Length: 263
Image (cartoon, rainbow, N blue to C red; front, side):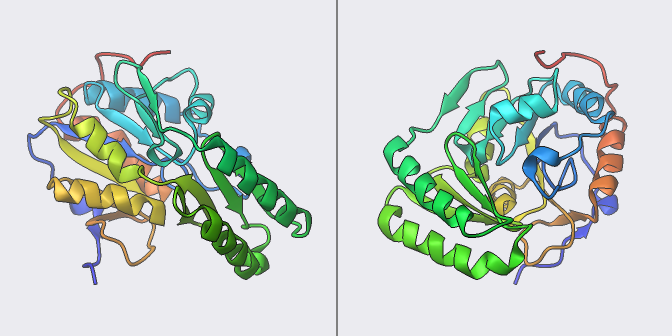
């Protein structure tokens, strides 16, 4: 059993430059009943800009959302990012790479899930482009049936896909990429190689990111009190994390000026 995370307020940073990987929903912004209903605080884009500057560009959004959706949320910013749990990656100079998509299989599973939605009011299917996310936050009593449907789909398509679970959501995604691979991809880039990675997230989907930075002697930070987790530090809420992030440039001893992310 992993040790209980230590309060983030006790974290002391050394002089090693950071590479900061940050989840979005449940970490930077509060989770909403539907993904499209989230609210982005008016000060959040400017906070991300200050962090991007203070870290000399080594700030990466890592999300289950697509890159296009991240850009919509944080417009006019276009930050380095790993979208759809690492299936698409945009590096620090704006180059995008994407996982090869099994289009035919994904379409067949979408049809099956659409039939499930028809008989299960309150559920929501989110097609992100390369993944299918079945949300049941507004129909919690259907969880068992949703699991049966997903198990049936994996019996037919499990060679190429798997189910990634989250908070009241089950997401079908191609095998071979996750939030930990986003960390590894960026840390293998020359601009990130000499930095200490820090990953911040809240959900089960972020555990791969925590594990990746732990292997590199980095900093893993969980938002909330979900357990178990391999994260070693904890911010109790989205609001607490934002306060910590706002103070981070000063804590690093760097003024919040420098390069701007593309816009």
